[in-house]
Length: 398
Ligand SMILES: [Mg+2]
Image 1 (cartoon, rainbow, N blue to C red):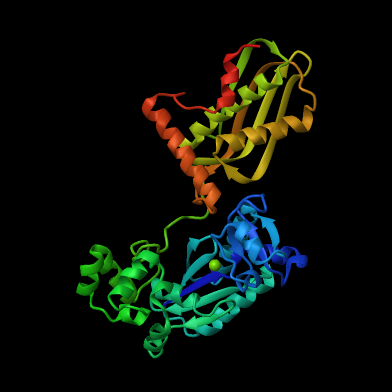
Image 2: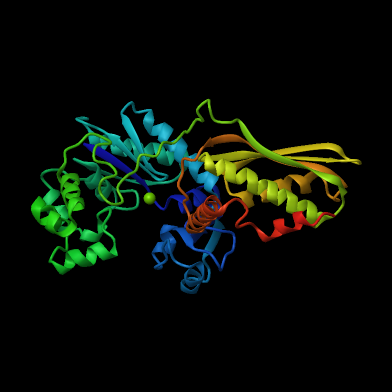
């Protein structure tokens, strides 16, 4: 038996938990800090009740509810909470799997009192984090995940042999993980409207429609499984991301680049362009090794300032060159208000860990795709085939 935990409106609930002013109010968490021009990446239940949900443009959300509360997403906070929850449920001594930032599965095998366990987990999560979770229990991962969605928020659904037919018969097929709009249309086209309709089809039938995926779907629906078996086979099912990545010893501790000018410069644009270029070079190397960095170091050397060494550790790890550049500028702005004469400079990233989390938000996903395309072009056509315009200034010696 599998117990699937799905946090309710996770990001929005965390924001409401730490800021009582937001409690009970319609709230959206935006993927970036631009109230009217972002995508809703989480909506509180109060907002959901008004027809607002993730994926929507914030602009449209505000049209539905002008009094909507807005918070910009803080990924570090959500990851931290997720890790704490995982640690807490690992304390039960059962086998636990991380499914996504707000979903976890526990192999409860033949645990005698699954309902009591589910209630206790809900209680502990609420007591420790002031947020709620919905829990589904079923014979396999796919059905347990489905069950967790049937009684939200703060619900518990147990799919047993006795009630399976009844509950699946009431559940639209689109609720099943992996059934998107396209698949749903195909299924309803052939008369499969509920999860039960799908559940009752023989494997050959599903194979005819979906090929090999159909057989996997059948296996996932009917399996009586232990944790991690068959995971990742059905479309959209859990992946096997690990939470805490440690860098193997052959990985570097830090990655950096520096440059010395032929003569000291006072030109802010020129110096910034160089910081950007060095950040770019550092970012490329970090990404090549599938790492992310939490700490950025900036080294400036000049006749007046001697050696200036600044560093800052950020909550969110990054391998985005532009982000590294922004962080380096923050460090510079902090201690070097007026740009001094600079003769040499360097950008280094440390606190490197394996990249564990896929991007959570639409904007980040787009950003990651952009970086991938950028790296691909430079790999294929040679370094410097494509570069940020500002780095052009580095070619003008001043
Ligand atoms: Mg959730």
